[in-house]
Length: 608
Image (cartoon, rainbow, N blue to C red):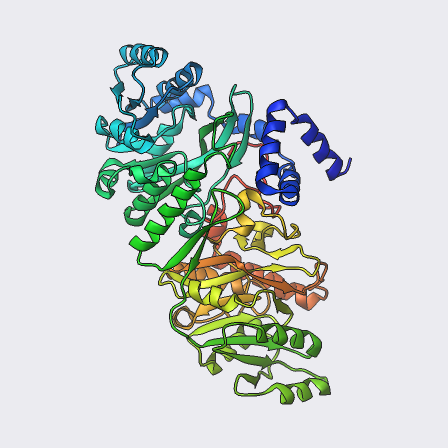
């Protein structure tokens, strides 16, 4: 059975009255075209069934028993904050039970009840607190808002660390154990967060797992990916000013931004420790229902940028809850565009013509000529040479790293743009977009989003470990699709991007010693990015810089014994130099995701 038929069967099975109603709401929000894209993308899932995966990976009763006997060196009291307001009885009971069943026992549940007039809720809380002294309740009759209510719960918290739990959600039974284990093994970070999933109202199905990267500043500026389960040192929360009512609807997002700005240590626990219940009144399942929350998120990012002394504007994307942060370019710096070339004049000409359309004009182009043989090539060089375009000659064997290093020696700009000759710029403002990002103090490299001529993705960032060493993600995904949790269309920090279009500060290029010339063809860009990250700089994937890349999808590169030997040597270089990273996994990816496919699919069902 082909993929399309299987997807249709999956869609038909999901057509409950509730999902039909939900679909109508999405249709109204997105329009017919965007709705269809999202509908088909939603059901193009990987081969691993998540419900089965979850059953195979969740903590067992035997493991919980062993965890309850674990004696850590540091066993802090953890306060779980829950603002309650007219919570359905069953949801409230299940939330409380998910905390009471924690294998780590040194906790307290701090509940702020914002409607003491609700007798059913009051009775449940009274019984629970009488049954377990670790459950503390504070009435908040004024109900000023969720931020204020959460602050009320915080006011009765005595723990050294604080965790946030919504009144209708659930913690995995090993959530606090995993938090405390991380505190002990990782020098007590001040902020911790885990992976999460969604669960249906009746708890019958777990779905939409959110497998997160380690701390990713640019992704956090595009979406509150940290979200649940968020835990922070109470002293840190007090220091940054707790919850702010002006951000109600995005109060957690605002707090997370303020905490991560100053936290000493931010740890990610790659386990599903939080189950986000989705029901008819939930913003999680109906993103158009609470626009005020998304506007509050936008304002939270704007305030964050201001505190970080970064100038930029924040706007909504078509996917509510996801944002674009556009930075303000400073000055008029010279950009040196370095393009290696051997013959292929028609290809080079198309590339140069697309660059000419750029609205930013302070650039120079260095064509690094490497052993062309066609007479017309040199005639073309003579024709195009000018103050802006120079041809420099590298007469040794092809070595991509050496050619670019040679180009940098002749470059005059403070910003270097490594560019393939077989690309075509799509948007005229691409240079401003790249420069404004690259100018940020923490950023060393900015990469782009590349498409094949048929408008499918060729590059949307590189993940270490895919295909053995490193590989691009979302290859072949239609341009209109945004991929797993919209990651193909969100600016984020990655471990590597392709040098087919890569901007780098000249100072950073020189600091790390340029491209490694032992890597003549493959992985030189990956190795370079990893060295830049090791030096303390960010590698940013910017999906708003878009180009066509005319590299063939079926191009066979290793077709001789010599090429195979060279490629194997380059693989061995990467493995010997980056073996620890290859073993531990890409921090900008997630160990629960596969390395055999490019689409953020789950790994196989084996527990690990």
